[in-house]
Length: 137
Image 1 (cartoon, rainbow, N blue to C red):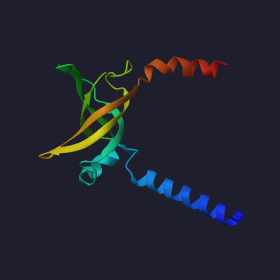
Image 2 (image 1 turned 60 degrees about the vertical axis):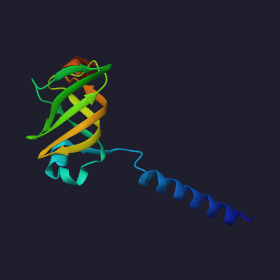
Image 3 (image 1 turned 90 degrees about the vertical axis):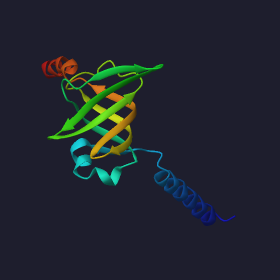
Image 4 (image 1 turned 135 degrees about the vertical axis):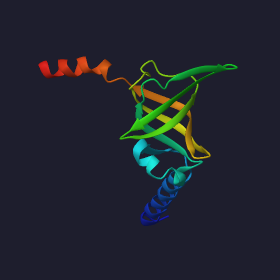
């Protein structure tokens, strides 16, 4: 096989692989809460990563069988979304924490809920000291 043919074949194989990866839904679409809630119907039934902040006072924990369930509201810029997370939550998950919840967006009546199976959280107050120390040095 000629060198040019090998290069062309390699390019085709890589292009097909990238195309399959992008169309397979392997990665969840990333959305900020306010952008998502501008038109949530276009994302209904889809797997998403939703970024926002936990509204203070909305965290509700329960256990069903062997599964821990945490319900809360995530918000940004006046827009909000109900989230039900199945499984353990990170240590940094608390009121006002910045979170990214990953799961499927579902609608019941006029209410949208993200049913989450992955959750990451960052508590800014835990990092403020580190940020301030950085300025000193």
